[in-house]
Amino acid sequence: MPVTYHGHQYLAADAHAHIYPEKIAEKATASVGNFYGIPMEHIGLPQILSQTGGQAGFDRFLVCSVATKVEQVRTINTFIQQACAQYPQFVGLAAWHPDITQLEAELDDIQNRGLKGIKLHPDFQEFAIDDPKMFPFYQAVQRRGLPILFHTGDNRKHFSSPLQLAHVLDKLPELTCIAAHLGGYTQWHEARQCLSGMNLYVDTSSSLGFIPKKEALESIAHFGVDHVMFGTDFPMWNIENELETFFSLGLTEKENQTILYDTFANLFRLPKSEEY
Image (cartoon, rainbow, N blue to C red; front, side, top):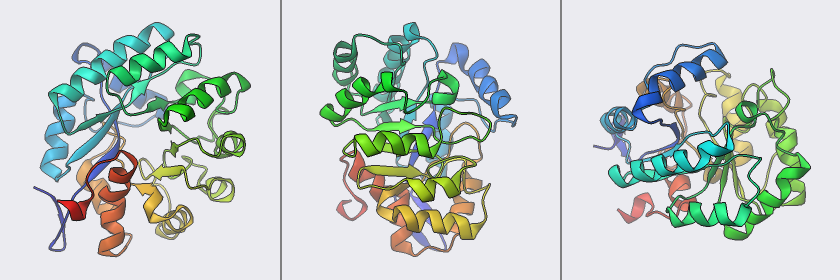
């Protein structure tokens, strides 16, 4: 069942969702809620994402988790790989840690698992996006054509600002990346000032409910609808509420379809809406 709004049906992908193994899901979800000081809508289990997202009409989900220690990377990537096998609608991103030294071997492992990119959360992992030690990794990822989903922005921290990501893209403009939260959570104006590029994408997660409609539309116009993807930040928010907020922006049906699915399909080489 596709997403339906005012009688129009849309293919839809959730471009930002976090999932955890059952034995740690409740604790991991609570930890994220404590970090941001918010109640969490769901527990971050794959089956809950599949069920609630499917009921809302989503066809695809970009799933990820974050490693705060090097030794967690392979365990998380095994879990994401298994979740994608169990739920074919999932597109998996690999975990990574800044202290990994065997870059090529670890990237080989990621691609051998069929994972489609990498998720980094500089605030959780406590590294600056533009730390010089990260550039060999960025260069290796760029050579392989893997996108990186960055958590971007947070006025409370000094690791993930849009300007720091802009420093990376100044040196590596061909690096494909997704700046989450419309380019920078709580730093949306800065994101519009300093972030741009054909290989830069943004998602709407944890943003539309926090900024005025006018500013959200300015951000979407700045990045371009073909570089914007809808995301819920599951398990944080109610999916239906996130959709309602998105549709309240008043975009055209074509713009809605592009953001809800086609940008995602283009980035991850899936059939576009008109090909179904």
